[in-house]
Image (cartoon, rainbow, N blue to C red; front, side, top):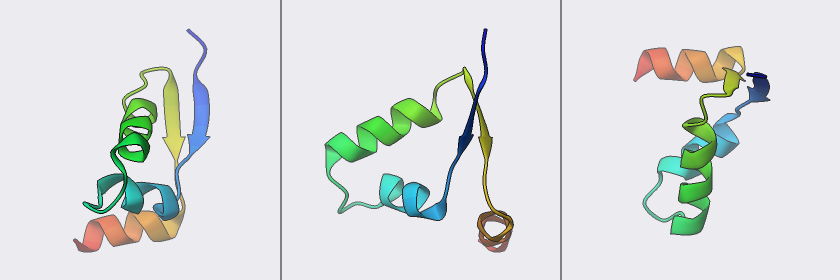
Length: 53
């Protein structure tokens, strides 16, 4: 299995969970986030926001 390194920014994560985001975009985001062949990276700032909430 080849692992795809994928950078996920808050500009992708936030619309993926917002109620006003079209279902097609949410479905595509969930498909990518659920992909077992991906390894995710994000910025330090996204990690800090996650630890605050």
